[in-house]
Amino acid sequence: MLSNMEKDKKAEHEEVENLNSNLKKLNKNLRIANSFRISFLRGLVWGLGTTIGATIVAILVIAFLAASIKTVEDIPFLKDFFEQTQITKIINDSSQNSDTQPEK
Image (cartoon, rainbow, N blue to C red; front, side, top):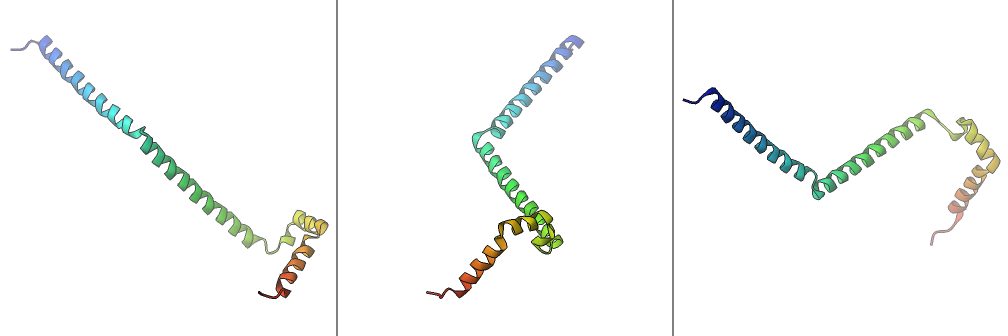
């Protein structure tokens, strides 16, 4: 029969073998997770997700602003800017010129 001391050593040996096996699996998984290809793909997915998310947020902000502001003249500082620069006259003139030009 095995003494308690021998049983403890055997249990410790099995535990150490189990830990070594788990460490080898963990090391393999970390190597795969940190590989260049996985990191590259992760970066692509992150960048694409960020771009899509930012686009959606921009669309929502623009839609909200378009629904809440009927004309540019509703915004005081833009109205003053347009009056000072006479940009509305320039826009109107250019749109009239494009309407009167003959097509080739």
